[in-house]
Image 1 (tube, rainbow, N blue to C red):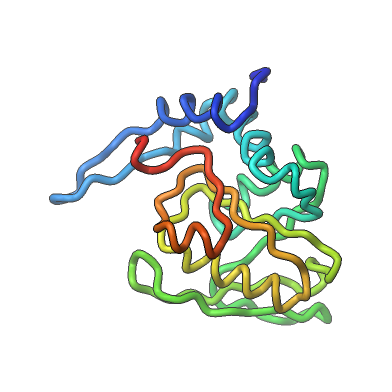
Image 2 (image 1 turned 60 degrees about the vertical axis):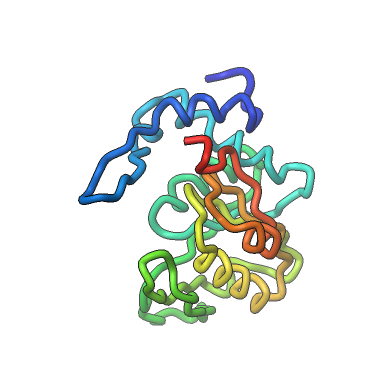
Length: 183
């Protein structure tokens, strides 16, 4: 495991594992090698945790799909629990009620339903959302509403890559390891 997990030291490792692929006239980043490289996988949780460690989060939340990989790695480093935010309509077949919100349109111009079990967020919780990439902030905004609905405290978003506008960054308290311009 790497000795220096600081966000700044870790950014170079992440950058080196991103490649670009063209689809039509557009170029898209490919960063799935992050999960294949063991030192990156071991270091990404602590690096993301360091972005909010001083605020003393009590729970990390992550959205399906990449958030449920990065979230537990970050939560372990913070020595707190993890809660999944599910996408899509979820059957509510348990006694544990769901809190559900619909996102504003995302980068693909679609709105998604996000939900979390009410028992996973408590009023005394201090919540950090962890994700691989933030751009429009639509999903993060909906998660913030879920946190507010539970009466918990929103701390912000710890993202590996930040492609958000300054307004989104400010509204959601986004902190990142890299800005997409660095890629």
